[in-house]
Image 1 (cartoon, rainbow, N blue to C red):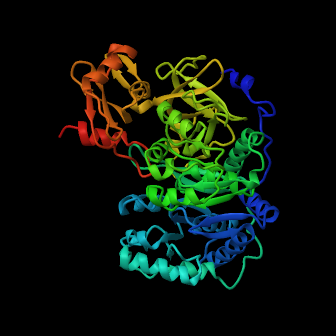
Image 2: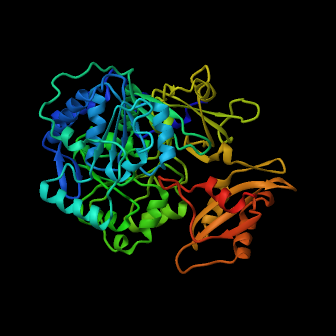
Image 3: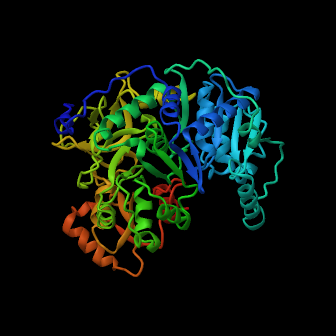
Length: 556
């Protein structure tokens, strides 16, 4: 496909990025040296400068070597957003070891699958989740489990207060079947790592597991060069839009174990000398907004669902955040209604972007001063896009919907221990099939229509749920909507809509259907309208359509 998007790049943005042999550790060292006195990470009022981050990273790294961690070993991190998380990420990487991110909210069986697949030598886990390892703490190559308490990096008095609250009020008192190592021992290790392990940019940095909408999650193997290239691509786009990157303060509310937040929050801003303010649990709106209201933050990246919740939360909307300048929305499509409401409150539209675990993650993004148009912006420099017909396999033209394929330096090397799935995902020419359906507009913007697996075939016609959802979302009473397909005797499949209203608002099913008839072809109109109090979400806050089908539509 012709790179029509290049014609609309902002002045100063190069169509290609200059790649080099740097690793994430090179970028880490540069940041800690250049911005040594800048605030790097903060949480609960505790602030770590870049110099302190490096000091603690080298102590933890030395402690990990004493536990036997060496080049190529995997270290699993089961941590929420906290001071410990970036310290452990960088400590692992400087040893040439591989970070395996695991969602702390996984069940024990989900956690066991990822650990069994990745075979980590060491697991570092927050105490309140540590019981989940009881039945397999000594399996799958695990040699040590390091347990940390949330307040471990804090002063003694704060450790005592937080420890008391967690143990006696929140009842966090795990009963373990194993003897863990203490994170405090690593944090205060008496020695410091003096010489780095030799790491090159073709080494594995992360095994990042996919969200697993079907079956078990797959481990995307991300090399240092993949993530560094993606960071360079992002800098090429935002570099001439954001002044003084080292002066930015970013609210890191989305979990850093998720690839979007890991790159868009931590790496992108840390490596430019900015401060990451850690939010351990974004679902706790009271704590999140309390931090936002007292912090002169300039950047806030989010999901559509979190933007929406904040807009309905008076302690947030009653305050004007005068330093707030930039916000990227990723992880799921942003709705026009949410974007418009966010603009009305903040004076800014969310900057839409698109990415995947397998692409480190960023593929495209809009500009900070763009008016929201439902697209996910322009493909990043050095990124190629192909739109493929799902039936014939032929490449499609501008404006034609098909399977989105990606090729670029940010693309993973493959799936961990899964050659079969790697061959299915990446063809011989290096094109990665995303599983998403979309098209490129005449202006070069990428639009996402939905997942290939979510496409609904009604009497031979393709129905894209996102298209129907956008129409229903035009109704001001609608807070959230999800359209899913399910088998139907007459038409093979039929669309079904599940809708949550804003507080105090409502519509009848007939009113919703009438609105759909004005905007949609007959076969696209939902067979049923289901009014529900809430929609199930995945662990990172996306609407979980698989759970909707299982809860409301699946037949015994």
